[in-house]
Image 1 (cartoon, rainbow, N blue to C red):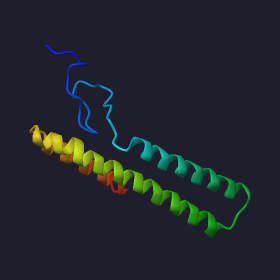
Image 2: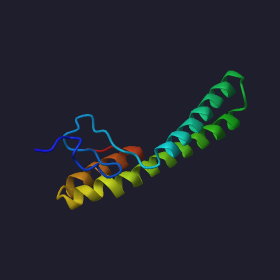
Image 3: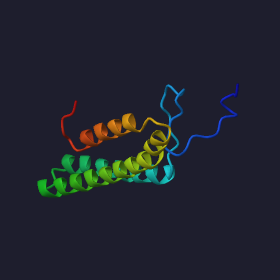
Image 4: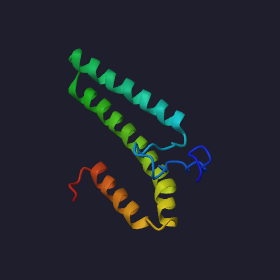
Length: 115
């Protein structure tokens, strides 16, 4: 029997089945974190704009920019998941379940009801 230390590392964005926390290794983790930090700053800026009674259209424009930036992070994570987890699941014979899970999250990100 092999220990967890002896096991081959999971591919990017692919949780080990025995990992109850569903931890993943994100490729480009530093870049994702940097993008999220910028988005956090944008949201703080929107808060200040509202506190300062700024023009509604200016606030909405900043909200649209923050939403677009979050969508960009989501798309990167979706790509990582598809290229890592879904591809591995398909190779291991669990492709249908992985695809169902992916479609469910796509519907959620799109704001559509599911189930």
